[in-house]
Image (cartoon, rainbow, N blue to C red; front, side, top):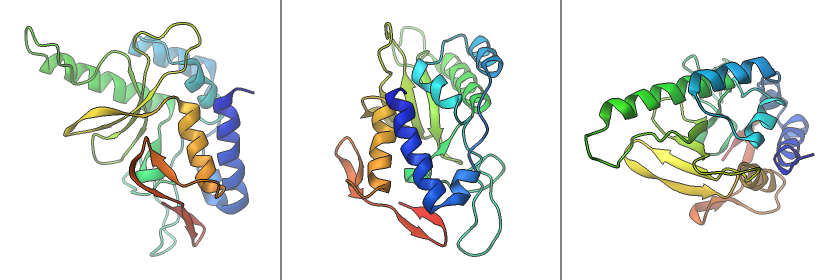
Length: 205
């Protein structure tokens, strides 16, 4: 079992035991065909660790009960809730492809002659995102060789991307540690470390 899948198994095991609604919101595995189609449209290869993760769960619908009632929300259809830190949603392979191609087109359209600045680089693969803003986490596969894991960057609309975690496995392990009460969640020393709490069956960071 890879370190990415081992960490993800800890997260999903905790969800199954403590917040089953979150576990129920995880999608079925992505197929090799779905991943191949996305890679063809994007023109880049997804990193191995991301493909491994998608083949376990192809993202999350983020459908959960709201605290105010029993309504169900879907982050792709107007909802606003996610079990991941900072309200990030785990993108399925189709959404990864859509976000990537949209951002790359915008980057090419915005590119000024002679400028080295790129709005969205070719090697940036979005994996987690917020619903309404251009923000989330991406894997940077630029210049990777062999089986090296892709570093995870945090991005936002009005800021340059910052290194968040050395790898996807590190991100998921940090999340699992916080869920299990081992150590609080933080991003490369930024933001206040915190443990999540469970309220009415939902995770709150």
